[in-house]
Structures are given as structure tokens and as C-alpha cells.
View 1 (cartoon, rainbow, N blue to C red):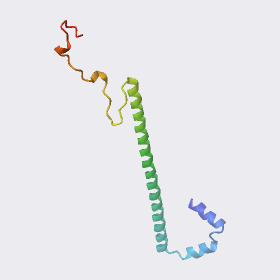
View 2 (view 1 turned 90 degrees about the vertical axis):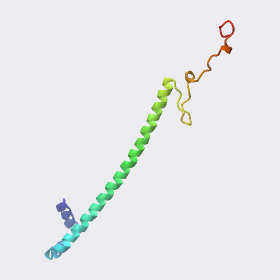
View 3 (view 1 turned 60 degrees about the vertical axis):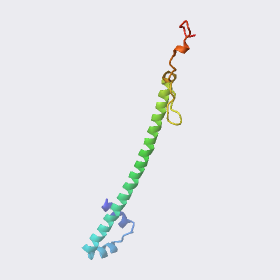
View 4 (view 1 turned 180 degrees about the horizontal axis):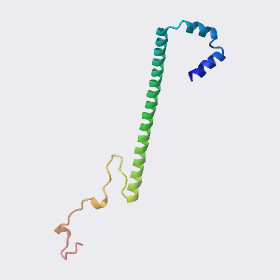
Length: 119
């Protein structure tokens, strides 16, 4: 890859042969490693920034999907409750009591008549 980049730079005359002769005849290893270190640090910073932004986008998407799952569960629960015949929960979160669970007044002797039929 580096060779092709170098070839393109030379062919397009962005880097001249005179420049290459002048720079590489006075090679300075200290400057070379300093430039490599700076380039490496810049690339590492770029990679970290891209990874962090990607992770943030993934976390946001997971939150959206969890909300959607909760809404689907709630809708399925409501459909199940209406299919069974139990009304869904009221606004205060309490389920209405079915008539069969309401307390009834126990029968007393005063409720029955003399003939015992209760009327």
C-alpha cells in the first residue's frame, strides 16, 4: 500500500525526485522516529474517537430497542387480559375486582321469614 501511495505521489509530481534525493541523503533517525510517533499517536486517537462514537450509538440503539420491547410486552399483556376477560389495569395501577370476589353480606335470621324460604 505504501509503495502505491509513493508511486502516485511521484507520478503526479507532488513529490519530486530532487526532493527525495535531498531528504533521503541526509537521513535523520531521530526525526524519523519522532514523526512516526506523532503519526501513530494521531492514528490511535482517531481510532479511539471512532470507537467511542460507535459505542455510544450502539448504547442508544439498545435503549431504543429495550423501550420497544417493553411496549410490545405491555401490548401483548393487554391483549391477553382482554382475551381472558379480565379488564386491563386502571390508571392508578390497581386491577378492578371481579364481582365473584366482592364480599357478600352474610344471611341472618332476620332475612328469613317464618316459613324459612327467605322471601
